[in-house]
Amino acid sequence: MSRFRVCTAIGMTTALLASCSGTDHKPVADASTPAAKAQPEFVVAARDRRGAELPVLPPPPPPPPPALQEVVVTGARAAPGRQDLRSASPIMMQAPAIAMNRLPIDMPRRPGYHDEGRDKFTAVAENPFRITREEPVSTFSIDVDTASYSFVRGALNRNVLPQPAAVRTEEMINYFPYDYRAPASAAEPFSTAVSVFPSPFTAGRKLVRIGIRGYAIQHATRPRANLVFLIDTSGSMNEPNKLPLVKQSLSMLVDQLDAKDRVAIVTYAGYAGTALEPTPASEKSKILAVIDRLGAGGGTAGAEGIRQAYALAEQNFDKEGVNRVLLATDGDFNIGITNQNELKGFVERERGKGVFLSVLGYGMGNYNDALMQALAQNGNGTAAYIDTIAEARKTLVEEASSTLFPIAKDVKIQVEFNPAAVREYRLIGYETRMLAREDFDNDKVDAGDVGSGQTVTALYEIVPVGGPAAIGDLRYAAPAPRVATASTEYGYVKIRYKLPRSDSSKLIETPIARANEAATFDAAPRDARFATGVAAFAELLKGGKYGGSLSYDDVLRIATAARGDDAYGYRSEFVQLVRAAKTARSLAQLGQQ
Image (cartoon, rainbow, N blue to C red; front, side, top):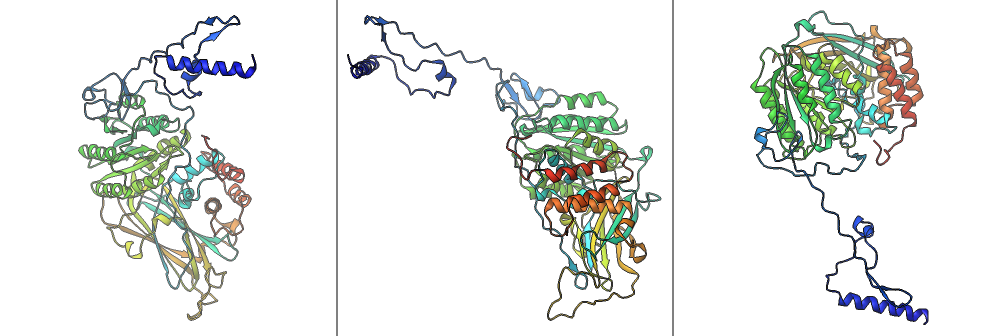
């Protein structure tokens, strides 16, 4: 028989068997599925050489479904069984007594899953040069946040350049402590340090460094702390550098507290609730046990968590102490109120009751910095980004007093430049902290706080009269003077602040005197030179237009020469980050953690 006839006979036999079968036929499964791979491709009768029909082996039965153990997913952890949430352990959230989400306890999660490219930052244009004759006054709120520097470090340690909006120059500069003279007493809680020296950005221009240092509260006299840890336990926190690092961080902070302090814990995921009622810090084992048992899963009802945390802080308000909510999150709110302006309005109203809000940011890939900044700036608190256990130690152990205990609030700086000596000026950084001129004397206008012993640095680049102008003269306006007068001052600095329990501000004033000017950059104060190197690095990372011809190698030269005393190694680490930036990629590789 020809091959054609054999093939035809087989095809007809197959069709007849299929039509005579009494079973229902379903579409063939995808060959890539486990079920398809477990079954033969054809279930037809076969014959041997003598024409005898061979028995057909039926397909193996499907495996029985796995026995699933139901879990009730709450905002804080998953508990086996149908446990009534009203009788749950302390770490369970307060929620309706229903099973919210029933999932297999061994629900698969793609190995190595990591969000990428969803970090949210607010892009703001750099401060431009301004003509002194037209706008002689510059006003801004101080900023002691350090989140930007830590995020930049986290990106560079992954060999990726940070997005330009993530680089805030003032936070890069203020990450480092500076050796300014300490104030004499808490009655006048600031000392000032003003210096003038040549700018490395453009020849013929100068830099003005304004530094302040806050009074350091002694441990024996510091106020009591009424703290509420508000912890994000949603599914997005289920990464090693998120909830596990949060638990390590807060455990270290608990070890810094003493018997007069109190700690409460609120968690939030799909719902929010109290995990620990206010507890004396002397009961460390109880507090640490609650922190240790926290787990991640579910949505992110951050707004409800914030509301409950503030309510708990107010219920236990300490009139003689510091009342603070400490939010630990990646900022990925997705349940309830998520509008940034609504959340900002809420914390603005709550700060008037004496409860402050500080933010600790974690994770990378879906980090919502824009929300973190809005909450911290309007909650009379600070924003820090914790990317490593070393950063947690810096923020919550070595600088615990600065993080928790303010020595002044609503701190504003106003600089009036002398048109006879300064043609143009620009403030380096602080773009999100600018204030109107009239806001300086208005005690109703909120501004930044300074913690115990903290230092704050601001840099201005100025164009002296007769120097290389950034803005040309107008055709129909009188030209700017070409020669400076014999003035002894470049300008005048005013600092306005309130003591922590006062609603009336006080004023500190100091001139920017020519007597404080260094003839060369290398003769400038060491701390001023290092701050300049950090500012130049930030300018390079942002791709800014004011860096002149400075390169990463120039930054390395400046920072290395001005490193000075570096007890904790922060400045040495900065030098390594500059080297890393020279070879870092512009975009993260998909799937990189």
